[in-house]
Length: 400
Image 1 (cartoon, rainbow, N blue to C red):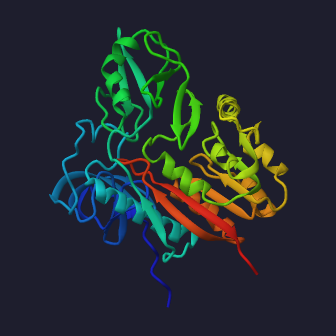
Image 2 (tube, helix red, strand yellow; image 1 turned 90 degrees about the vertical axis):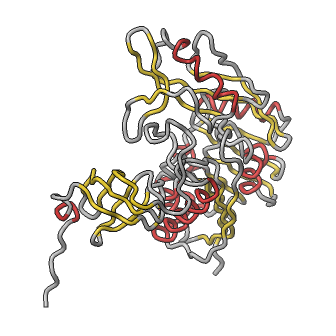
Image 3 (cartoon, rainbow, N blue to C red; image 1 turned 45 degrees about the horizontal axis):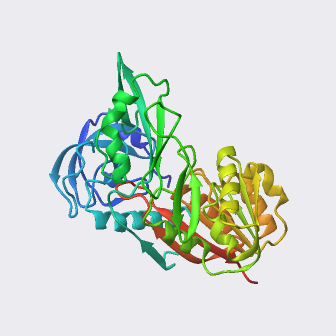
């Protein structure tokens, strides 16, 4: 008996403009998930338990995507978003959910992604760490459009390059939020279409590129008795309150002779690693970040740190066999294939993976778990009101 041919979801949804949908759960990326006659439908700004009228906006072979037309029955935990820009601005995903519920649902979504894509055991214990939900961001990136003699400054709309003007942003630390109202005037004659802003531990600001009327100098921030120098051009973790926890979960208690910090940035993990290992090699491909990493090592009198200014992909072939410790904190896209394969070949005794993208992490873990087991895993909610969740995975070699 032959099976009935499967009709693609795009065809089944072709003549449907609107439908009613029950949202079952939140998935990685922050969208709500429901099924319409068995077809997976993803809906931004929806909440588990919602019953919705949804307009179909995207029809794919095996799923659809929609937008909320009407909330027929709200799910538990849904609230009125505190920020007036939510819904238009693409910066936040989850303001429509109560703060505590956000962390819980994001953790569940990450676990489901790692289990489904990496085959990770769902019984693996995970610690979930959260801090304040508002006023936490140390840095931000704003976009600029020009209308005649004025600048429109804000964030991109969701799935768009249209700039949504903002004069308030309650996820920013107060020093950053306070500067927003004067940016349209200050940036009226600026040529850039993007502005990076960052704040230091004393509340001082730095901008990039340089703009007349805005500070653009070096910043300083103390974390766990280590003094980090950086400016607005550098990547630096955004959540001031949880930086000590991130270091604690990543660096841990292990000690030894040598550690490698790949994608080291300005040395955020390199500096504390240098207190536990006789020698640390920090590899960073971005020129300004590598320069600050060297400066931070000198400033903190850590002569056992060697900073290598090279792309990890080109340097990784120099990784020795069976190094005691390797920490990787790659960009959102995860490890490149050459880097992943070299790590599997050289087999660090302890490998620590830090990620903010569960799908990329799952892809890499699927390969790494052929040689490693998960000793410990921690979820840190560094990005409240957004769908992102930082994951720290401690991997150790499997024993025969």
